[in-house]
Length: 145
Image (cartoon, rainbow, N blue to C red; front, side, top):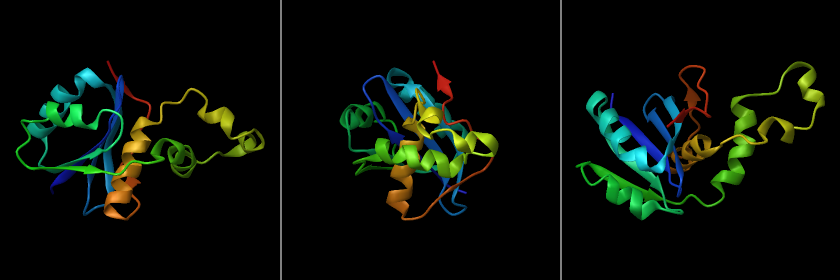
């Protein structure tokens, strides 16, 4: 099945999601240092059948797009307005609070969380106009350094 890469670009770090559009499933969700994005995407393309890359139109989208010059298929720039803000709410949809933690303020659970991968997921969901599920228990805070 062809898969899609979605990137939430940033100056120092990027959120990246690898998903299958037909299955509506996320297989990889990570945060990368921006300088690692080119090599990481090259490795993904070597291992997966990637049909397109979707990049949020924010902070450094043109620089990220230039780094991905080697991708010969479609690269789409898509609106990413308010995705970081919306990522906080989506975080709790993906990882609901259970047990006694429910009594604590929700903000406690997302303090210092890196929500870039969830922002990339929101860009994908907005683009495809559908919600995606997680293929496995994915940690959206995973860093590639």
